Length: 243
Image (cartoon, rainbow, N blue to C red; front, side):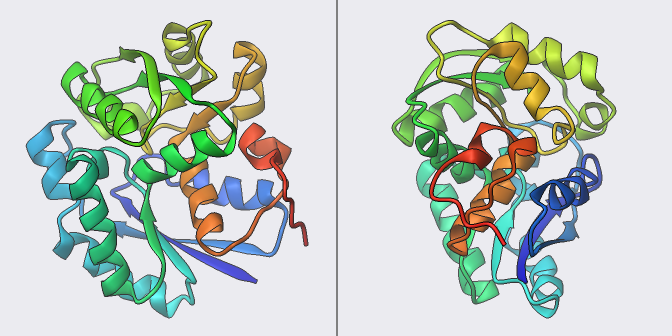
């Protein structure tokens, strides 16, 4: 059994994780510790506070006791708002506190895009324009080319968590571009786990979503590869280790 730990802010789309665990169909357990979201606002100052070291540290002991072998800060905006260097420092501090390998959803997007060979990506963001722009800057710092950014302008995670299939598909379609090798949806408050194969069929290309890449990143940290087509093209890459 491989146990993976996730620090998830508040409660919006946390039910994606048991669904992903089921779709993995393997000896992998996903454990969540809910961190204090503070002010629910997609605003740079609030997002910086959301990922503050003391807030993240409070959930670490719960995951350590659960037997986690790696830990991921499951919040995209709470990472990239610190910039590339700041997000690296955030992850280093988390790894030191946890005493195990650590990463964040922001870095997961960069690593996942590289994994599927998507050097050019389109961003479908629920966030306001300024926050979405910071995500694009982060991706560029990671060596990716961003073909365009579409922003839905949603201010709160609570509103994003209430979105369904229709809103999700509309967002992805609005952001897609012919020259993009993949479409990225960077909000862990957005329910996507149930729709990944259908999204990829609709767009005709790989789709990377926040909770999906977060779990993949945790597997990467533990040197696991699981073949799970129900989780999209990212989970069908070689080498495959299936138990």
